[in-house]
Amino acid sequence: MKAPILGIFWCCTLPGVLWPQAQTTPTQSPGAARQDTSAPAPIASQQAEEGDRFQALREQAEHLRGIYEKLSDESMTDVERLLRTRRCQISRIGGLLDRTKDAMQQYLDAAKKYWQVWGDAEQTRVDMQERELASFEVEQESVKKLLEAELKDREDLERRLANLEQGKRTEEIKREIEELVKDIRDSQASLDKAQKDFDSLTVQISNMKTSIQARVINIRQNLNRLDSWREEMTAYYEKSRAAAQEVCNATHPGSSQTPLPKRKQTPN
Image (cartoon, rainbow, N blue to C red; front, side, top):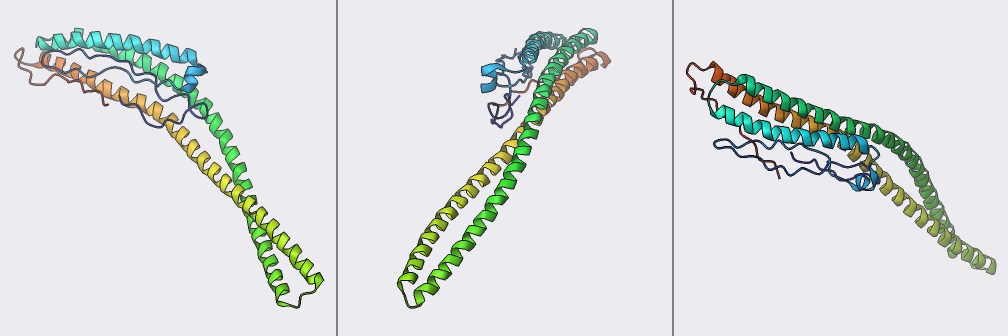
């Protein structure tokens, strides 16, 4: 299966997207290309390398994944061999398929538990980040008001300076003009700082919203990916069962026209 995108993970985000994909080489049978049954699993992330908080759950899922992949490869080799005989062997084929599906479900239950526990932990982080975001938005509004006030003060000082320069200049007026010029410069510096703070907050809030959205989506995608893979593999196994049943239902042995299920190539 193809690993989902989104690589913003723990240190600041998620624990990881998928475990390392096992390199399972499909066994090829004459007349039938077998579907790649290697199970999807999350890729080790920086958080996993530094120490997964739920390592025991992860190791249990990886253990069950190994059991399933070995059983699936062996069972489907036997199923394909039995199907090619075109003799009614539904009991043997059904047993192989049932054991394989049971092993698959055990792996999926463990993998989903791992992700659900991570999802709960991540939701706590998301809730905390939402509160931080609300605080940032309040601060952003304060900076915006400060920016507007500084702009208004500067415009007022510039009008006062223009009026003084139009009149007869005495020493006192000159001093007032010099003080106003200094005030305008100070006001401009404050205005520039307020603008810089406002722009910085805007970027932080935008990045935080993006991070929250990506993390929430990624939690859901990891679970959905496992469900999608389960549906695909269940359909593959049941096609084999249907082919075996049709052989048993045929009037003459070997007369079934149902093609053997084919393994799909794993997407790159």
